[in-house]
Length: 320
Ligand code: DGY
Image 1 (tube, rainbow, N blue to C red):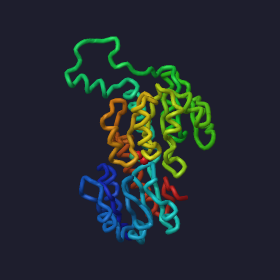
Image 2 (cartoon, rainbow, N blue to C red; image 1 turned 120 degrees about the vertical axis):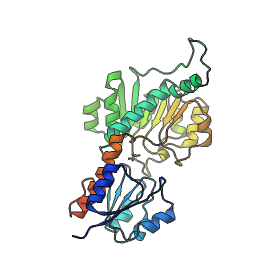
Image 3 (cartoon, rainbow, N blue to C red; image 1 turned 120 degrees about the horizontal axis):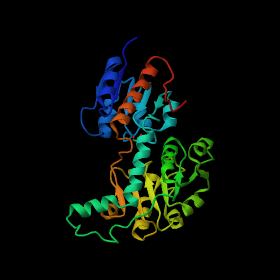
Image 4 (cartoon, helix red, strand yellow; image 1 turned 135 degrees about the vertical axis):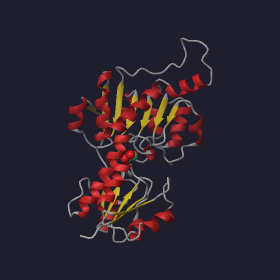
């Protein structure tokens, strides 16, 4: 069978590139930046398979420009950058990279939780600025974690892993989702509650749901008003789940204690006021950024392409 022509919109870790080159004719964006829309639409023409990034908008225009493409393998677990219906209507397979980044992303959510609760970044900046002159009883007071209530919105793979990791801190776990999830409860001992109860009773609220029309601005002024003044919001899912202007108001007016963000409503930018605030930790979307997870994501994306080439159902096909 003739080798497929595969286009990769951004260089993947070496193991994944080697895997692809072993099986296919591969062309890759050589730049260390995402392609402009114009470049993207030009470069995807005449390909059998395309490996995309979460910043590549895969809509009807993209899919028509890539006429003849069999599979778009997204190098991410989230696929809100893809118009799934448009792909399915055109008979184009879409795959993602679940599981291999679950622990890395859950661990980063914990890193944000600790950093926000104990004011780690703020304290580090203070020390580096030479401001530490003596130990003080009131210096950088934060929030306790052990024994507190952890609220999880979205009981999928990452939400479950995140909640499981709370075990050592003897926390009460609340969760909400479209419906109760017995697997989540078995693994975490979490209790299913409605969103309002979760917002009112949690000390930490961590978002792990996908970005859908129903989850856009799931957290806005009304929700911040329900939270405890000592609450901390963590978002490692997708930026637009939180109304970022409402978050600025909540942080400024002391409606909540702090936030930890890895994702933004208008990525790569954040609301201008957030850059100046001490009670928010801002990371550049690095949830899955461990060497192993990023390698495994690349191999999984490439394996999906190989499955499609061999006439098999891609192992993590999204539009079944
Ligand atoms: C994903 O996979 O969806 C993350 O946001 C990036 O790894």
